[in-house]
Length: 249
Ligand code: SF4
Ligand code: FES
Image (cartoon, rainbow, N blue to C red; front, side, top):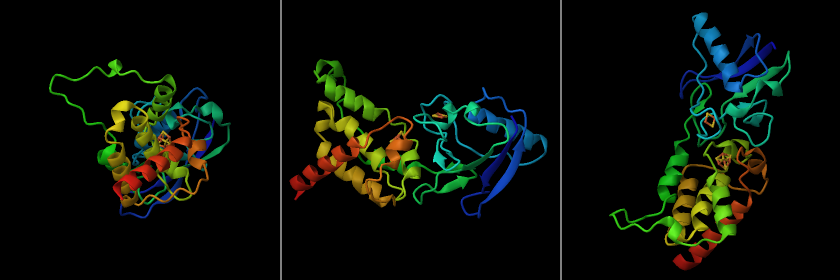
């Protein structure tokens, strides 16, 4: 199929970006979206032009790097997949596809379609871990029985890949879905309960420090999340935060 791509180009963080138009020809419907961008970049390099910078790593829906806004939707038109899992059969010959980076003050553009998502790393550093004794007498995690329901909920929360689609889809650029998934995956398990109060306070504080917006229960984050992370995690984080605030009063 032949397509017209309208892509955000921006030389660096300081430069003023703009949309540029590129035609691409003979794109197979079996190609992934990123392979289609590879074709464009080969074409640009052959023409002596600067290729389009975009993030990617695993190309199989695991790493969360391939964060693109495609035709006004995070990770494109299909549900519960990342951009690298999106195939060109979701488009048709003659289509115009608009490709932009995530838009959020806390995710500044570094170059073209690449944004700086280190704000998520700093939220994790603030409390997204359990402190364990690694001196040689560690307890096997499987020796602590965990109710199946809790284990399943914790696993669901742990499938968050930190892609940032929730922030990009939210009209407030809120990071509540991401932060609540990271709080929940530990708060639901006995190993995470020891530091639960400190964790939720520190992670929410860091989230606010980074300049993410507030949650107004719109739910766009849940709809666009490639891993189906549920809004119930936000409710759980709010309960965790409330109980931590009461204890620290
Ligand atoms: S909650 Fe979903 S959309 Fe947000 S970072 Fe995690 S996987 Fe991505
Ligand atoms: S490149 Fe890793 S999730 Fe898409």
